Length: 110
Length: 114
Image 1 (tube, rainbow over the protein chains, first blue to last red):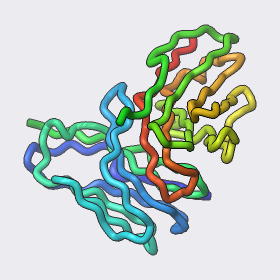
Image 2 (image 1 turned 45 degrees about the horizontal axis):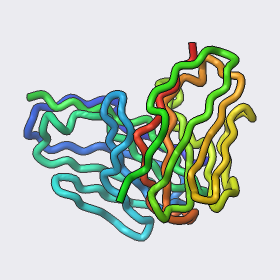
Image 3 (image 1 turned 90 degrees about the vertical axis):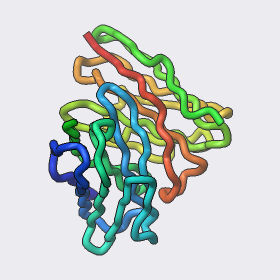
Image 4 (image 1 turned 60 degrees about the horizontal axis):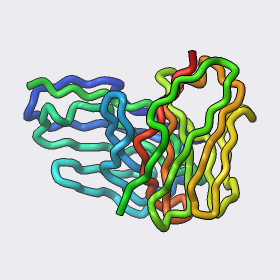
């Protein structure tokens, strides 16, 4: 049974710092992995999708990597800004459904 | 191109009632998936529909059901509501049913059961 874990559960850093969020999964048989952000009380915003054959994807200040063999993905955020404050969720596409981590709540202090 | 839309955005019901939520996928998308998000359980998969057929189902009781119409719009129904059904219900659409395809999410319907 696929399980997805995100560490840490919460993170608070000063503005301007670079940071890394972690996501691990137990079964390497995945189609892809997606990173989302969710603002309080809101829906999901897709950030990056990495297909199982890919190693990384980049969008602006965000870079996501995928290591299927070790069951790990990281989301790197460069030069963090207060507007990056949100909950970040990773989800793996496995067995025709998305399996979700519990999220990392990120607070960027001005 | 319009995104995934969900109606209503907010809903308040009482225990024992039933509720129907609606999801309109992105034009051209034929697969619709439904997810429930609660503070305690996080995000959980409910079911997926493709070409009017339920293709996959999560671990939820039979009170949760859904359907998809020929225009790919989908509805989910929850009967005999319980307090624990209070949640954000999200739907997502994709072009097809392959696991490698990206899913695009709607804004969600927030259901409160009193």
